[in-house]
Image (cartoon, rainbow, N blue to C red; front, top):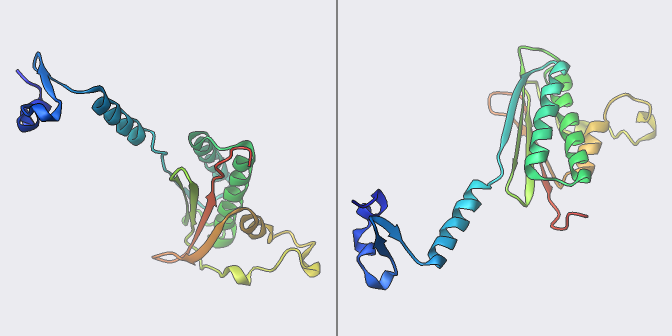
Length: 188
């Protein structure tokens, strides 16, 4: 009795040119084929996970945000330096979404999405507020803004991230998309 793979692929298994042969009802094949199959399996199993969290707009929810960020940092095996800046960037953007976007209204939600393709990390933060334009944010390095208690979050985000795009979210609110390319050299 053959297994399902053999039963479905009798034409390949019976072809001596394919290098496949039967052994006690199992499909056996050359080592090179097995190595390729194992590599494809490992590659698909090791694909970095994506992370997503939606929270009510209360600053107390930042604990859950930090836990998710820590999990993503471990999953993506980021260097200590990149991990620090990713955590700071996410903290600043989520606090902005909760405080400035949603005005700390717990009936409004803030959403965080973190994903990676191995070459870059994409972070998306969404709120349900009225929205704003990045260019409307006062420059915190201007003399008249140095003592103001806000405005530094966007500066930090723009300084560290490789791409920063703000758009209107479908259904209202803002969508902040940030991308950080991961250096090939871990010491960079």
